[in-house]
Length: 320
Image 1 (cartoon, rainbow, N blue to C red):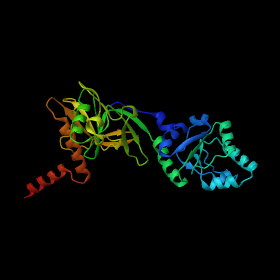
Image 2 (cartoon, rainbow, N blue to C red):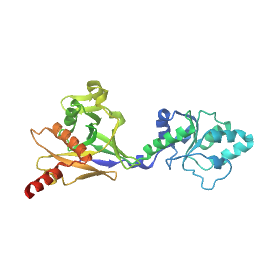
Image 3 (cartoon, one colour):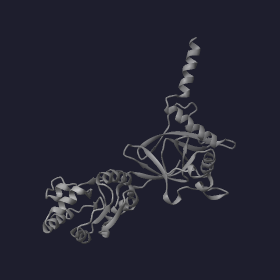
C-alpha cells in the first residue's frame, strides 16, 4: 500500500509570499511596499473590496481577506483631502489586513507606502482589470488553500483516464508507466505524486515541481520524458479517476475482484476513488493490464458494465 501523508501546513497556512509567488505570473502582480508582511497568513481565501471601510464603516468588515483597491476605491481615495485619506487608510491598516492589492496598475499613494512599511503589510499591484483580477485571484487562493498530500506512486493519463499506480517497491510501477508512455499515454508524476482536493471535491494529481517530467528506471537511471518521447507524453495535472494497486501474487488473493462487482475504493483527502488490485507475477503483462483497466473504467463511465450485461444474457438464456 502506498505511503499516505497529508501536508497539514499547506492545507491550513497560506502566506502573502506564496500568493505573490504564484500571482507574479498568473495575476501580473508585483510587490510595491511592505516586504516584511510576506509571512502574513491569508486566513480566508477570498478577495474583498473595502469601499465601505474607506468611508469609515467597519461593521462586518472582512479583515481576514485580501483587500483589493479597484477603480472605484482609487477614485474615492483620490477625491479625499490628504489628511482624511491618511486617516482612513490608517484605520484600514490597523485592522491587521493580510495585504492590499491595487489593480489596473494604479499608482500607490505615498500614505499607503508609509503605512505598509510601518505596519509590515504588503502592498501589491496588478495590471489586470479589477473584476478579472478578483476572478483569477479566487482560483489562485482556492488552489493554495486546497488540502494536499504526498503519496508514493506513479500517475499517468491513460486513454483520457487519470490512473494512479501504487504498490511496494520493486513491483514495476515506473517500468509499467514507461511502457504506457511508449504506447502513446502520458506521464503526470513518477514515484512521488502530490494530490490536492479542489472546491468541487475532485482529487487532482501532479508531480512535485523539482521532479516534474523526470522518471527513474532501474538499470537505466534518470530520464527526461519530453526529451525522449515529446511534449505530448507529459501532463501537468490530472484528475485521479482510478487507483491501480499492484500486489505480489498471493498477497492480492484476498482482495481480488474476479468479476468487477466488488466496487473497491481507495480514499485520499476524503475523496473515494475506484480501485483495482492487480497481482504481480512473472510473465504478467502489466502494461497491457493497466491499459485495459483504464479503458474498462472509461466504458463503465458511459454506462456499460460487462458483468451486468453478461449476467442478463445468462438469465435470458436459462429462461428460454
